[in-house]
Image (cartoon, rainbow, N blue to C red):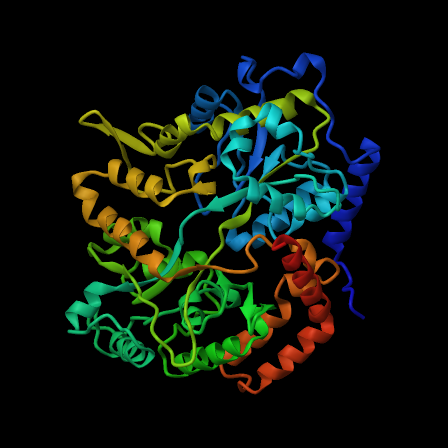
Length: 525
């Protein structure tokens, strides 16, 4: 049977959405009344709205807190942002589903894993097609027309409407990050080929590069569900996004990367690394906190993440261990027969959706918040955050303070990340650094620039999650994670990969592929 059974939580969410749709009587967003049809930026009334976005351990924003007051002053809206653990999106999505099931949907939130499709169909989120140009023109004008065209093509209702605000990234954000100071200490060159790469990992394993006299180094690794080790897949030309297989052209056809010969070759190589002790033995057990602890604890020789967060890693390591390390962007090692790349998605996952709010004050406040946040005149202010918490003044200029999750509230309105340009990000990092932090921020800017050499926009960029509708297990990578994990740790021989491909196709992969290729043909006309 192709369509999978829904779990109890999904059923609860569906029922809640039915209630939302039934109460509204239609799926269209409520039109603002004459009294509220003014420019959202013109009203002086402060309205509080609840906003959900990823949080990786920072403080929540509560009524009257420092960040609440900051957003109220700068953006004209009261922002309440409860703490919800992100955990790769898993915990966040579970908690969001519970809120929706309880009919307590946040006013503004970042959707995840395609949830926006079902919400749009049930009328639970606002149709933004007419609202954005009129009430949030800064959002509307900031995003290129061709991107809006893709968003309209992705409308799950088939009406060409806009139900989410996309993220747009004009540079490659990801890279493998290797300990250049360890290479220098061991007299090794930056690896250019796969053989050289393996020799480097062996040296990291055997030659005590952190110098503590213990064999506690992990040459490289990643996290649970075979995620966040894209550098090992990338050298084989596997389209991966933070460990999630993506769609790209293979033999001239749009294909799910998880079922390609490229993936099979990559898994065979990674399994050998694991067997030889060159991949962290706890890779498939590491959550974010545990893996970050190894990276920032002077234990990991190579990790994969955003190049622009290099200085956070370095400064945390320096604070934890006293070591001033050098993490450099890893040039993709050459593998015969494959063309490697780091996946670049110009259209990042949807940045925001807006609740289909019957409370017009809440709806208008939400649009006002978005409009002011996307006003480029506010970006430097939003980048700096709260003085004394996120930055300090020195010699007349704002200087970002080091990352401190115990004292800093989570800054969620960073539209420069959703409309990211390399020039803006590098200039802000450079201009808000201090002389004593320059050693770390200079590495960040260098790595961001270097990462562009290996970034490639994939053909499946912008594909909606609706292609997976009815095939939840495929969307959640259930079968892929099972087989990939067991192949990596040696429970399955690599020959079992062919069994995975066959099962994937029979359990809905063939239908999903058909939908994906139809979408690709439509957007490429």
